[in-house]
Length: 257
Image 1 (cartoon, rainbow, N blue to C red):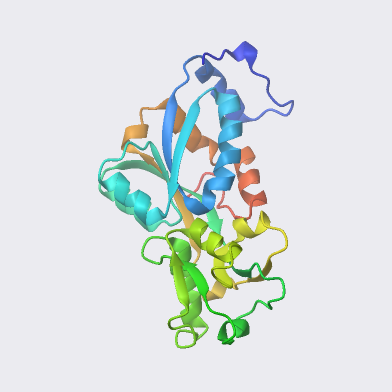
Image 2: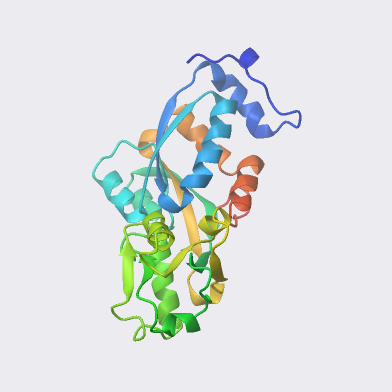
């Protein structure tokens, strides 16, 4: 769809980002983005605003960070990668598959139960009256890696042997909890915010390594205006406000932590 600057309406309180987008409105492009499962709800909000102000179109696919990383290694046509860790984007850049890195969010881990009668705490995980604790797959999902660290640091490996089930990604782990297939689950704070009536324990950050999430502008997207402008938008005030309100922390504007 052709969009002209005259057809667009902008907020009264302008921003540098919006000003920079105006010249691109007459030459809109489409970018394809690989997005870690935990970030999908926020990404939908960000894409809505970005498309309205830029005129570009953003398509995205979601999955575990490890799975998306493998797809990119094997040539999947993505312009940008929004991972749930820093390791895999850095490897892709080192392999000359990416151009620029940005820490766009810092995640937090919660232990939750959809059973409101359950007390949620480390002690509750020792109770033999429940069947399963769900975590995301530590091999492919950074939130699963963090959950495994917590279990180890709390000294619960023996108590939970044979009682942990793994979701392919953090979204599936959340579903295990919500459907009752798991009594407890380690999930992202962002998922907790969007789910009223769930009992949770905020995991102290000294029990797991920081979940710093990096975006990588891939080599394919370096010449795509939609991709390069979306990458810049992620560090704008407008985007960071939405990211923080959705349950994440952010690095200093425009920096990689």
